Amino acid sequence: MRKYLLIGVSAFVLGAGSMAYVSQQAFASAQPRAKTYRMLELFGDVLDTVERQYVSEVDDKKLIEAAIDGMLTSLDPHSGYLNPESFDEMRDQTRGEYGGLGIEVTSEDGVVKVISPMDGTPAFTAGVKAGDFITAVNGESVLGLTVTEAVKQMRGKPGEPVTLTIAREKTEPFDVKIVREVIKPKSALARMEGDYGYLRVSAFNERTTEEATAALTALRAKNPDMKGLILDLRNNPGGLLDQAVSISDMFLEGGEVVSQRGRDPRDIERYNARPGDLAAGLKMVVLVNSGSASAAEIVAGALQDRKRAELVGLTSFGKGSVQTVIPLRGGMDGALKLTTARYYTPSGRSIQKTGIAPDLEVAETREQAQAIANRSFQFSEASFRNALNAEEGKTRIGAHEPAEAPPADYDVKTGDFQLARAKDVLKYGSVAATPKLAKPVAKMAEVVAKAQAKVDATVKPKAPVTK
Image (cartoon, rainbow, N blue to C red; front, side, top):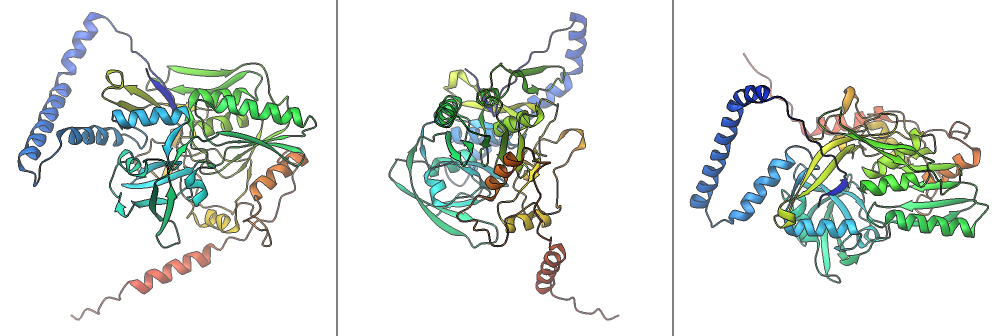
């Protein structure tokens, strides 16, 4: 059975032409196939040489699995091979219950990078942040390991401690001790924020829509005079495509939610909402940031394009591709996680590498706003060297005027400035009607000067040349 992750699914079959056409193509494809067979023979020769001459005995199974995974990860950051154990773990995760620390990770240049910690999990409580690099687990380096191998080291029996070595921008590497738990993340929670409802969706697993529907229904029953709704998708790394569609469906009265296209652009699969708005037309704001990825971007893009909600926060991650999980021999040999399509918002936008820009750009802190001005805040799909290209020549927004940021006297430790601005948008009725705050002054010249000074201090002047 194939599992559709967004991660998502697309499959298509090309029709056959006439027999004459097939025979012509057979001759035309003979040379490329001969090259393929030659390369497969080369692979066998290399494997044989390694078996006989490597300095110590090798595990053929591990070598071949690594070769398969290397082939797939060379395509893009989200394709890969799942061995049977990893495939079982992935299924546990999409079911919404598994053992571990509660972090979504990926690999960047051989280093494990945190996409986001999950709400309420040990990693979240320990202060692990999106964009952190994990360089070692229990003192053993994970540099160069695949994500699957690194995750194996982080998972273990509930109750056992594990120490992660974290590298974070502008800080020295440090250790974080975390106790493993059986992860049962509640992916949807609701509460009141003054006069407004607040629905937090932290992931898209098999229980997300059920949990979100129950939480919002109960909140509205207790607060019939609710004046608006905030949907928080910040640091939501994505998950199941059908859950993204059904969460969007909760707030739409029909129409398209998302479409996806594979290799053949004529092969389009569309997903539509059904009549019925669980929020009964209440004004909505969606909170997003650079940790809002994949399925979270589908929801944000659908509600933005359909004019159902306005977006507040920072430009999203930019993962606009769909992965199909293809079991091999029913899962006995694991599965392929293969990128098979791009997805498009209702207006036809592909946000691959570019992300979804908010209607009101708001930084969490003044430091983050300054980072936007000097472009040091770059954790996104576009940071992967082998990410799928954006379509139509689009590029992710670079350094630009800083976003709105908390006033100097705002306590960011106890307050949530992005949430506060979302409430302002609901109060005034729209982003356009909301009074804009003074943006911090960008210090580009100061940043550049300091960087150049460091370079000058480390580069020794060349000795004069005498002729």
